[in-house]
Length: 607
Ligand SMILES: [Zn+2]
Ligand SMILES: [Zn+2]
Image 1 (cartoon, rainbow, N blue to C red):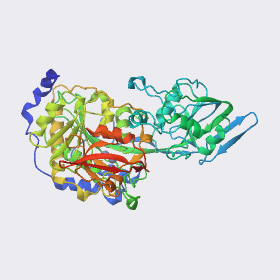
Image 2: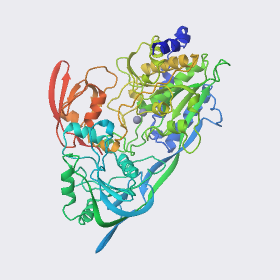
Image 3: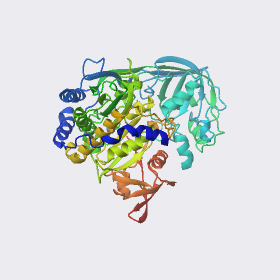
């Protein structure tokens, strides 16, 4: 490691002050004002507001002297995505010797959004919660351990056993996502997965909403949700127990309670999912390198997403009731990052740099990193740029609300070249940096990391306007945004001038990918501060009227214990949140200054 550090740092030593320092907050203000304007309607991917923002960015690229990417006729690079799913008339029929019944209508039977289309029939196996915890987790829970589901229709309960202790809940919650359950059924040869929200669970008996799901294709199995009434009718064919009794037997988490075949019943499931395809636009331009020998080496990319939540209908909005449906301006998220890329581009265009530098603006980030993934992996076409041609990717997402000179630099574990390069680039700007190794971030750098490209992400921290209409341009700290833009130009410049591209270090993922949004069902209203290094979790705010605010938590409080679990960092907190129950009081221990406090908060359902 040390050797690699020296090798990476050597050519860059004399360039520290080579990027001009002149502040240009007027241009930054103009960019953010334009992108966050009411007329752009929150820049939802696939809408006119997104298109107008893309055209603004393209005009700016042209203005600063960037050219379209090789093989592209313009700055706008289209990609297709699934804008939503709906049920197009799925049906379910049960048949047994003496009779049967058929259901239509989404109040009884509805496709899961990731389902394949198709009609299947077969015998029925009730597989409990349909949970499988990988052996590596040393926990020993497999709903399928004693069941043969090959060519059967598997019926499972949503979520995970209800009466468990916190630690077991945290283990099982990770594997209770619906997609993960469908995958487990598919791997065991089942013909379909049918899910019911059990009578002892939250949302008992309710059909599962067709979550916003952007997968272009199905998951390789037919999957649907049924109402409690349909499930009860099925359980009438079970001689010795009701659905509620079957669930109760499972709910203490005893791994030896098994599912069973429901003999003598044939289930026919016909699932029809309609997927609406739309087009979104990435925007990118290239600043040619100034050295003929190095300019055809792998490029440097500096990028940021420019899309946002529109009016907040897609499920990621945190708008309060009275704000719901309003334009989500997305000034910090992420007009700030897009403006900083343009400002960095102006600086880079005015200085020599030996590799090509690509300036990129992604769309579809808020819908699941769609634009950057299409760029790296190709959607229905070839990738725009071969990842092997990218030396490093610098991302900015939410860089406009700096407080106390604190800047978080994430993903530095992705190359051994980063620590020294970052430290040296910071000399002229002087931020209080917090560096974080983890490259698996909920932002576009992750698409590059997956393709083996060293990445960095800059972030000035979350705040109470996050994903709300109130994230407006007047709240941006432009002086410091200008310093962030300057810092990003310094990093890009150093990266462009490295003789050899930085090495890529694969960081082990910190969690398994089994869980999903389906497990995020409790809302506490806390806003974690990602930029402060303290033992525990510092809050940068609380959402007004939320459970944390009602419980008495304030900005600056440091949570040290939550729901019986010690909280040393943000990851501990995320795990702890996974297992709290809606409506059940949770004990929170926190420090306010040096004083220790203990309160209770009551999590609410996330809608
Ligand atoms: Zn963002
Ligand atoms: Zn966002």
